[in-house]
Amino acid sequence: MLLFTPGPTPVPENIRMEMAKPTIHHRTPEFEACFMHAREELKKILEMPEVLMLASSGSGAMEACVRTFCSKKLLSINSGKFGERFGKIAKAYNIPNLEIKNDWDTPVSVEEIINALKAQPDIDAVCLQVCESSGGLRHPVEKIAQAIKHLNSEIVVIADAITAMGVESIDISHIDVLIGGSQKAFMLPPGMSVIGLSQKAVSLAEERNIGFYFNLKTELKNQRNNTTAWTAPTTIIIGLVKYFEEVRALGGIQEVYRQTHQRALATQNALGAIGLKIYPKTPALAMTTIIDEVNALNIRKILKDDFKLHLAGGQDQLKTSIFRINHMGIIPINESLWVVNAIELALEKLGLRKFDGSANKIFLQNYYA
Image (cartoon, rainbow, N blue to C red; front, side, top):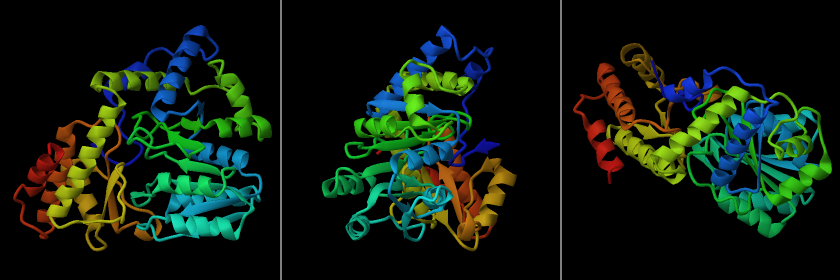
């Protein structure tokens, strides 16, 4: 089965084999050296002064960041299940929260956020997704962050980049907190979250000292010494070091970004050329999301049963209306070609379109443009 869901992504064999080596203890010089290497590589790609690795899914990092960096009132952006999650975290801890809610295909605007902040000046933190993976939507995070800091530099900007970290270059000039996850572009198993911190965020974390397991002050103190407060996800961190080796062999992270960009645009153009509709108004590079309220479920079934290709469906109101195709990670071009080719064949099986190989042709023309 070829896994093309937008998380978890497939773990390549060379990374699996590295993680299959005998486990080493997390309180040893050997693991500390590995941890230091992973930290330094993450700092380079995030271009942030500090980075933390937590033994949790991305939701754990989201919870830690809401609790640590919001002391008065939160503004959260809900354009899908993951934006909704920030509001649920605030509610769980009785943190006042104002939510801007849009359709899942619609990005939030700078104006909406600035108007909300002006109307409620007690808001001290803003949470939003770089890529809202419920529908494959890209928010204009960089422009939003810049506008927020221009209005009030004390407001903390928290960006969930779980499906954007390692996918594209993110301008962090005005972002304080950037959240990532192991099971996306890093091509690792689920179980580790990543938090990039600005200098302002570092100062706030050290000052506030909130929580127990998700205490970012405690983690900063330990991770600066290349260890962790609690048991580290050792196997995943070892896999992350191997991932960075693969990135270097490919030509560096900018080459990963370039290939991901070409793959995403080529897929979107190929599927558009055979009559399929892209769902979000501003598509992210991490995935291509197709909406077809009548045929989406049957297309996915044919792909799985006949072509051994597993794509993701939707959630809630989009459960049977969309399918999502992953572009995260280092993906061989032949696999992406297999995806668009199989989708075109599935359309023929459903009697929707005669197969003529257009998807493959358009993909290659765009990928090598």
